[in-house]
Length: 76
Image (cartoon, rainbow, N blue to C red; front, side, top):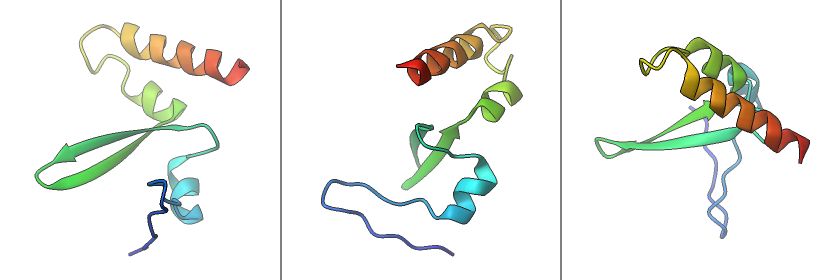
């Protein structure tokens, strides 16, 4: 188990081992899901997006759009 503290700004540090394992890099978006009294974090990495194409029944259109937006953000 890895523990980290919350700063006064509500920020936390994700341990390096976990960042490497899940491909979390500078600028990676993190989705927060509240479920059954728990908070789950999901990194929105390119690998996750590619793996879930078609998941919503839109033949990947929504996930491709998210990927395009992520690429646009990187250029800014």
